[in-house]
Image 1: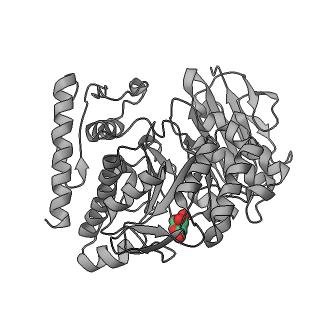
Image 2: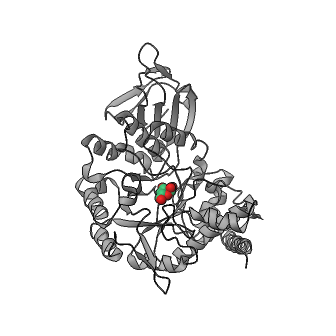
Image 3: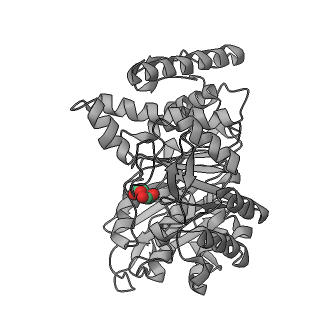
Amino acid sequence: MTSEQTYIAYMMRLRKSASLLCAAALACAPIALSQTGVTAAAADGRVAAPSISYPFAFLRNDAAWQTRAAAQAAHGTSQEVAQTPPMGWNSWNYFAEKVDDKGVREAADQLIATGMKDAGYIYVNIDDTWEGQRDVSGVLHSNAKFPDMKALADYVHSKGLKIGIYSSPGPRTCAGYEGSLGHETQDAQLYAEWGIDYLKYDLCSFNSDVMQKQAPKDKAAQMRLMVTAYAKMDKALKGTGRPIVFSLCQYGWDAVWEWAPTVGGNLWRTTDDIRPEWDRIYAIVSQQAGLEKYAGPGHWNDPDMLEVGNGKLTLAENRSHFSLWAMLAAPLLAGNDLPNMKTDIKSILTNRDVIAIDQDRLGRQGTRAYSEGEVDVWVRHLAGGALAIAVVNAGDNRYSTHPFHLSLAKLGLHGPQPGKDLWTGKGITLSDGQPLELSSHDVLLVRIDAPK
Ligand code: GLA
């Protein structure tokens, strides 16, 4: 079978199981199939998925969201994992290729010592450069930096944490290490034997070595090869029987948010790599506007791992970065040097009120309500009817000579709104047209429990 045939067969299976579910629940409109996926479902506003629950589906009445939810249900995506955006730590943003067994154990220890584990940071994720060589049977071994991966996983688990790993559908990872091409089932089994709980699967050389070679000049065929590669690893992971969070990393190509749930993706990178620079962080944030309808329990947009505490980011920039990731229902994967973390960075990463926004059980990603010059206003609907508002000044200082005036009317709110400023921890009452003094790249983040 060519990979294109495999892809079509895969989508046919998806349609078949979706139809069976619809027949059982009498709640779906016919599902149409195209080569880009399932294109219609659930016309009556409900999700026909007896085997999984979307408790807030009544709030998600847009057709696109329902389409993906039905596709996910049909595919049997495990709803045990990533019900809220995954939280933890990842080695890449600070340590890159310097990560080793000792550093991962220290990160696990520090998650506990700093209170981060208690705040929700559970996954300890090893990114690229752990891979060694395959033996004659094709079994992949870790390299000298990781003498015993099973023992490391046991150590992380003994702390009440979970462990993640990294690979590529291509022959080589982005850093040039061994990828999973042709060994997907074998690698998934190996991860399960080690006790791995999370896989980040990074496109890397699959583009140059497979997509461009097998389908030169045919972008659509290249993209189908890519989708098939992710579906293949999804199947391999599911075949292990172990719940493993599946994190797609292919930089947002081909509107990944539209198809990732159909290949079991629990999260998917929406952009190219983050860097610890305000301009890059802000550019990524701007690319998230409009993607909110694709996120929900079990399947999240991923604007990349956190840079909080890295590079030369100011405290204001660190606060804004963290606030915006919370508004975006983004995975919170700290990427800093935990053993040497400064107190003010720890305070940002462990701010329980902000984490509660990110982890809100409703799972509705925030939207950019409006922008005025360089100031953006984001809102996020929370469980129980609460609302979070983030006002970010991406430009210069806005002091009392020329403050920003917040329009509550534009947010559909009427009259004074009592809430909590999540960075001062104090009460605040917002009023329409209220002047706000915002330092450069700083944020006002307010939670309103009973918006009117
Ligand atoms: C890519 C990914 C990064 C990181 C590196 C590792 O650039 O986007 O997040 O995983 O590869 O090589």
